[in-house]
Image (cartoon, rainbow, N blue to C red; front, top):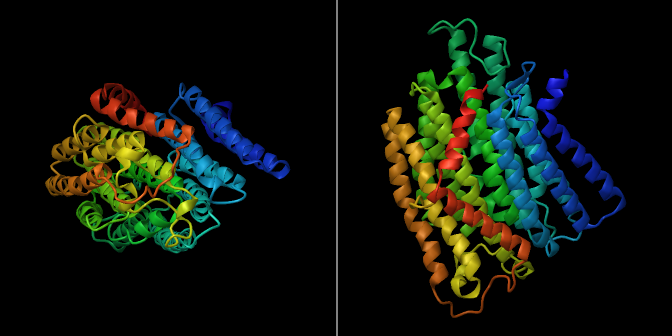
Length: 489
């Protein structure tokens, strides 16, 4: 490897070094505040390295990795999300487990896996990043020592994630059999139409996309999502909904961009079916939920169904950058509003819920009755997050959905556009139901935490302000994303 190669992957090297140092610290001093501080320092150092190494991009490292401005943008989002999760977890874990030190190491390792996924240009790199991310999440989901929900969530995620990986691996094997390449690029010699090899290649692509759909929890591969979201610790649920899914989506976007996979009619139809089903089914099932974490699980299914519009628009738009721009703007907004929602859930959850119906968190809607009167700041942040997820104007959620709508119209993806409109209309009801619940006076004493930790509250407020600020004045993030689009590999 050359000096330029090391400079390009400097963020990965800094994060890996920080993880090893933190691991050594844990070996000598088992002090949660110290380990949390070391993790925050490592993430900040990684963020600085990410920004500093962005000057000489794009840069290819053999045929294995491509580091460009798009991966830099996503890595910044991942690191910021990991920082928020670390802050939220500090007070959250105090009442959930006796020795949470390894939790922070696993969180940093999961972030390393996500950062590897978005620079992957080879199926080997994709699988490496995916497994680093997934194995870390298996443990993080089941980390609390009290209660059965985390263990149940871990088991379901482990089994079904393994099924998804198996399907994806078999699809990769079929594609390699027909093309002899493992990089994200179209075969040098197009396969003859109707030939046996062509059929095998299409089946392989379909299995690969289906395996990815498991990771993105697209319908009909969404079965694990509500149970895992409900059982996982609230900070990790937010991390899973944002970092984990976004990293997989960007890897899929890069594959579709480099291989023109959506130009194949069969693959286009499969992804379109996943998208429409996720938008409609996800929102309809969310209507039936009385548990906030399960409701947000079905909401996330719908939101990644919306993103299938941008994925398919790559094959329909003359200006492919419009589809990529829509994806990145949507993901930036989705990170802010989803993390804001889970920040409030994390703050309000406490040890009171352990043993009460075997609950880990304040996740029932009734837990939020009268929240405007008991914790007004938290209620305002959650309201902003819900309005943004619904796509109400003056929030980043509206801008993000508008971008996807324009990409869908530009690509004449009318079925998906109408699914987005109908799904968004359905979603307004259940998001507003949460807001109305918070304004309702409760006859019972508050069922949530009596006091809120200042650091978690600051993180939640900053996320809420970001959602509003980017909704009122989105031009900075739009200009930033547009400046990146000339460097995608």
